[in-house]
Structures are given as C-alpha cells and as structure tokens.
Image (tube, rainbow, N blue to C red):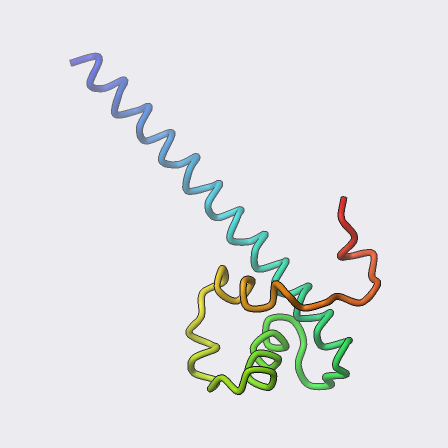
Length: 96
C-alpha cells in the first residue's frame, strides 16, 4: 500500500514537471515565432502586420496559401514553414 502511494505521488510530481516543461517550450516557441514575424515584417516593410500575424501574412503572400489554412497550422508547422527565411543582420538572431 505504501509503495502504491509513493508511486502515485511520484507519478503526479513527474506529470506536473512534464506539463510545466511543455508549457515553457510552447511559450519559447511562441516568442521565437513572434520574433521571426517581426523580422519578416521589417524585411518586407509590412506596416499593419507584426509578430505571428506577419508570419501568417508572409505565408499567404509568398505561397498563396489561404488564410484559413495558414491560421490552422500549429506552432511547429509555422516554424518549419519559415525555417528557410533569410534573416537580416540582427543581433536577435545571432547564434549563441
């Protein structure tokens, strides 16, 4: 009985740690995607689009993808779709 309780508590703690790490990864991906969008907006002179909205606009404009298709993409797919974008010289994107 004690083993089961210890196991259950350990599993709960591990699940919480995994959930927290997953949430942090998602936040980091969103920050990266927003930064990429800002670079795209600056590079292409977008006045009304920045952050993730600029990523969406870029993909619609560059690949002629419909808005609903672009907006339905998850973060990983959006990052993959813009992975070949050539960034301007900017300290934000310098490799560490």
